Image (cartoon, rainbow, N blue to C red; front, side, top):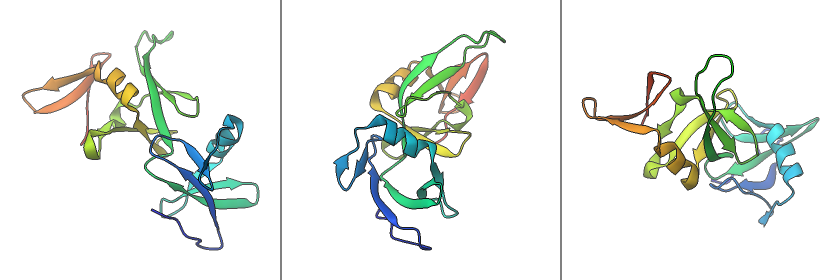
Length: 158
């Protein structure tokens, strides 16, 4: 999907592919500091399109699927409660707690979850999907899949 200029906000010739790789005019952006700066300033407009907004500069970007990709899944013990939440490593190197209430299966059985206070979706990479699959169980009575964590079942949405 190509984004066109709207409301005097130009298209920035920046594209994020389904694996979370950023491109400028077709060339891969390999400078992590610049890509992370874009992540820090990434927003969505009223119609859901992705926009980078820095000071007085704004531009739309093209996102093939999601700007965030889950690269790995980890289980840590919580020091306070003794709970064992799952954490996810995102492609921008952020480590976030996985909100299990947002895990869902999309087209072609690709797994997704919400990140950044539910402002964005993240796509699970193949490797992180296999890590998450270690926690997925099947409920034959309800014909559905879930993740049980800290004595609570979180059913995976479709």
